Image (cartoon, rainbow, N blue to C red; front, top):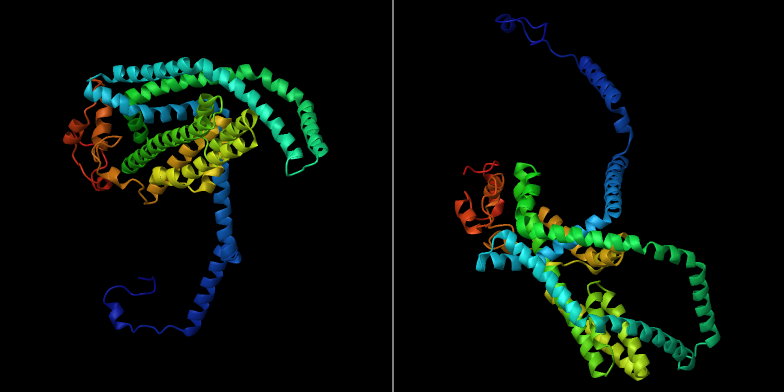
Length: 450
């Protein structure tokens, strides 16, 4: 009620005053003038420019955060690489530790220790059995590859291509000159080898230390991380992490199988052709196959050079055909069939990830780039509503515990650890809710009462 309106029953006796059209025009002009004073700067800038500016500062903020994260990864790459290696090994060895706990009733500490020591003994034993032949074989491979390169140069000049030998020699001389001009850098790199060896040793110790605790109490570590998220977001974070772990396990197992197929295929081909150093060649191909796209092809080219030196050009061509055939089987059959939903990364994304990983951590970064990118892809897709592993929602034996037991597990993790044995079925039975984990959002966000 305005100040000029009479109160009470008088308002019924006084007729309503008709509004003057001139007053309405004046009020509208005053309102528009005030609006212009308040929002003149915003209205003066067109909407596309404002949208572009909003996108620009957000993209700059994302780029700055990404650059900072990349800088921290480069600075602490020894710790980061060791941590990622420990996670990859934990994915492969966790089923062994779980089998020892469930079948042989080992305590968690003993099962983790036996798994870790057993793996070390197995690796050291294999290296000891084949160590001398492999070490000597790699030295012979280097000599054979060098000699094969020389014969390849001779074939390019004397063969059907007929490249001018003087031009080839000029190219080789330029390469040697560039090598000599950078000799100081090579010497400084050689002097820094002790630092690299120290970093490798430190990374190995960190990986083994982290691996032991990942096997022993990996779920408690993960639950501590989940507790950092807001209560209503914990279930989605937990489910996304489980999908990432499944993706990582699928990648590791599949990549080992693919590398084994590459090594066996190229090794059998080399043995049929009667080439020497078959075992070192197979091991080299196996290790190189963990680098996607180029790894097995580059290491397989060493087999071609060995065939060129030991046999002739025809044998080298046959060996090249075997290498390409194995690569085609891997790329067109094994990778799509075995990897499938486990990774499902576009080849462009794989290439960019390998290039970025190589720039950050060298060969080891190239090895770890694809699994890291695959996990990130799976987690991001889950947060955007696309579940690459829908069976995990109802799988009772999935990693991370049965569905619907997150809040109970978090509540139990606050209590002191009285027994090292972990009983998933008891946890699931005592849980308030078992079923689709997405339904946890409808429950109270706090942990259930014991």
